[in-house]
Image (cartoon, rainbow, N blue to C red; front, side, top):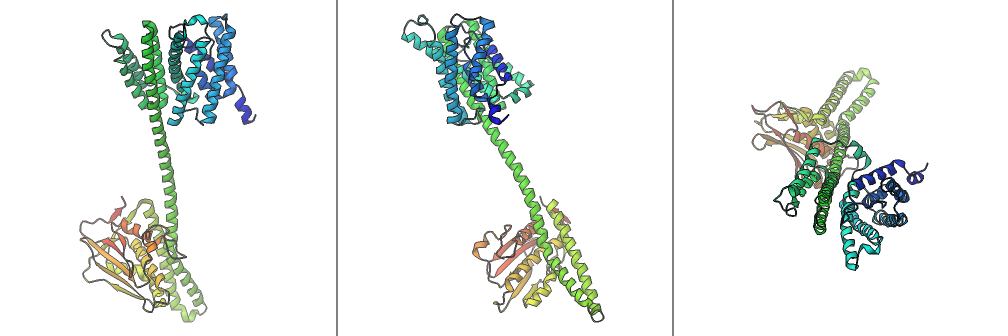
Length: 538
């Protein structure tokens, strides 16, 4: 069976549910009241029919008429004017079908009423459906039902008010609570307390001798607001249904004057509108919060994936130097093997350097993995001169080959710093390596890189790397420390971002202090008696 055929199929469960609901609505109301507060027999209940057509489709329309007519036979018997009643029910169902087409296909309203726009247009349709219901009932009566035009108009308005309340109570109750919600519904302690609160409010309004029913009607708003704020539109529709049933029962029991009934109907109409809009507002807010939470979860997942990608890029970036050195040393060792007698001692030294670079690469992988997983920084006391020397040692031959002057200035008496040797070596390697990449162009006759350490603010040591290259272009200055920002064709744009992260993990800062000449400065904590040996990113 294709989708279209499935949509056109008639479910006997739907028809049974409609028939039982019609019986319940008819049982809790009295169709013979002076002002119609309930459903008339053999006529499809407007609010229920509207909801079922919206949920299950227009092809159910003739079946709903037949079910309503058939379930009335064993209860009321065959009325003498059954043909007129059947014609009135058919006319009402045709009108409701037209409203459903306009609502779903013309206005594109979701039958489940998921937002304020859907609810607003549904209220417009409810008003029209109530007029249709009132017109069918009033004008299908005999001429003796009203003596003049004024009586006809009064009955039409009175019936419209009652019909509108029924549509606003019944249809949203069915639409906002689908079958799955009804199956999962379990009355909890709070729900029972809310129902008791509605009953208490009705008793205060009508049960106390010295109360004015109209002045105390506002008490019904209190439990309605409570339910709507806790359960949104589904809860508000249930509270309105309970209130409407209780109010109808009391009005029937008191046998109040017709005008008094109309006044209570108007109050109930205001209560229904308030409850529906308040419940919808709460439901929309909660749906928005759920979407935000889902997007936040998706964002967290994306950030974790990005962090994993950044770690992979970081490893590739930081391992580039030791792996390049390993390749060069291995190539040199292969050449030395050709004349082992002559280059034997040199070969041993080269193999030692291969072992050192391999160990350094392993340290880089281990430390970066530790850092990205938990932000751990292994702090130890380091002399600034030794720290700088370790950081630039892998670049010494490259600097000499390119003819770049590398000057290091560490004043005497400068205190030791607390730093992770491997991470700060990576920072220096990156800063000096960037300077070398800029200065390798032969256009610069005098090329030099200056590394200077100095006493910074109290408790800090500042280290600056300066080169006399062309400087930083203004276009990239503002995003210099952002990932993937680079002016080098072969660069990944991660070096400065990683370096700043590593320095900030030490509690310091890394900044561009001069665009030309280019100067990067970073700070490290000076060793004091109170400093700990391990820090962790908050």
